[in-house]
Length: 186
Image 1 (cartoon, rainbow, N blue to C red):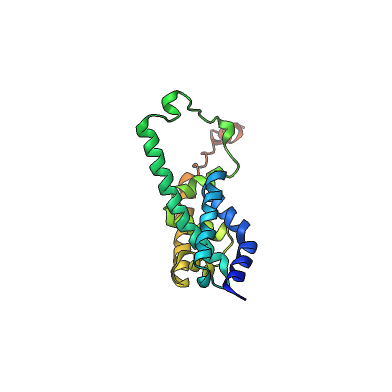
Image 2: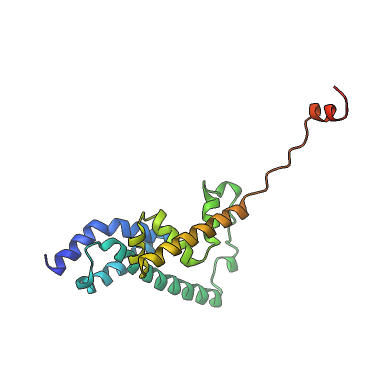
């Protein structure tokens, strides 16, 4: 099979997985998602001779780099718009979300958001993309042992954040019957 055929097969097989990977990290901003996915497959085309047999983790690694570039570009555009003074808040169009805007499981995303970008990524690769440790290692560009340790530490930090967010259980107040018995009534 030629490099062109290998690329075409990887594109057909993994396009939607890469699209979902990118969309989850860009909160579904459709225009940005399409642009980043196109860049991922452009890089894959240029490097089609390097495409491994298990292409998906490799494509996720390429997508991570493309996402980093897109996020930096978005930040530069945002700062430019802020300097020009043409943002929504400057024109009184800021809309605050109401309490009904909370999404189910939002607390998990909140706990995840409190972690470092590296911890978030290793957890997302295993939970969202359902990669095994060896595949995570390929996506992150590290060894399997390092990927395993990163995952273990990220899970521990996520658990700690969840524990911090969990409200203290209410202190049980004695019922009337219990209080009466303690005071010799009843």
